[in-house]
Amino acid sequence: MPRKPIGDMAFAKVYPMYVQKAERKGRTQHEVDQIILWLTGYDEAGLQAQIDDEKNFQAFFDEAPRMNPNTGLITGVVCGVRVEEVEDPLMRKVRWLDKLVDELAKGKAMEKILRE
Image 1 (cartoon, rainbow, N blue to C red):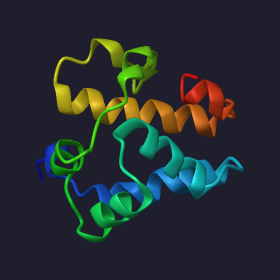
Image 2 (cartoon, helix red, strand yellow):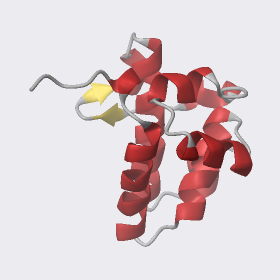
Image 3 (cartoon, rainbow, N blue to C red):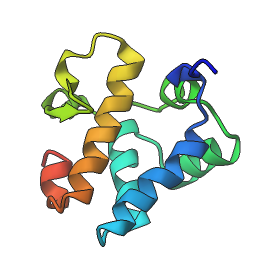
């Protein structure tokens, strides 16, 4: 069976995996949400609406109020790929989110994750 393009995947299906990854390492859903809100500019109600409406990743990022201007500071490797070298704009945004959740799960301080 061919893989579904990332843009077509429902954010609501992946979101619980982000939360589970963080919780397995002693972090919280609130911290995952804080990362997502920082990255996308959604407020809590907006994030919940995206989840409830089962928006795909393309719509999730297209409808984001504003991407954080400090996204250029997100660097490193996710799945063997440097996030700063990802050319596809949607995939780069997904990798930014993956990288931030990875940093949370690895115990990094929230101030450093949020590039403060």
